[in-house]
Image (cartoon, rainbow, N blue to C red; front, side, top):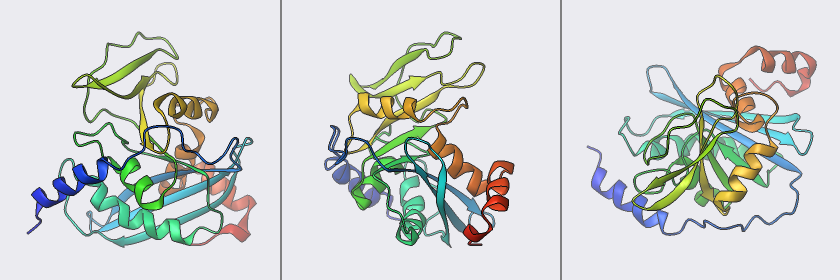
Length: 229
């Protein structure tokens, strides 16, 4: 039996430790990472993929994948407790440690202000940005059907992040502070890492690795020495 009340209390406690201003530790990073988490074998296995990209070229230089037994069932609002164990294993396997991490998921744009980007950023003590493909909580004005339209995402008079049309004819991204970064810097770094797709390059590559998309398979064919599984 999962003690959901204790987990929610733990989220609220950890949320108080999240730093929402710029404590980046760099002027320009050398390495930026993207993380993506999914589930296999009917949810019994949690899979985390982390992509390391050089900056400013945004070329893939390393990746790691971790698969661990899923420790708790899916419970709305408590997803980070499922995802962080696999992320930590993938993180520990990296030979290059990035200075900034984009996570496919929520940062503080979460009912208790502790989505997976914030939770993992706190555990790893790294600046993180939540880049989600859907809204978990908060409100925003309707976006117009124009590329780069931008709106604040708010909840109970608190600014959680941004809703941004990153590409024409695509659904918007929900960008929020993870840890050790300000809302404005989070948005600015996402914009710096765009290369014409809906997703910024760090999470686009993490998704490609996790799903073994053609771009990643081509990269593996060009870099056979990098194959790890």
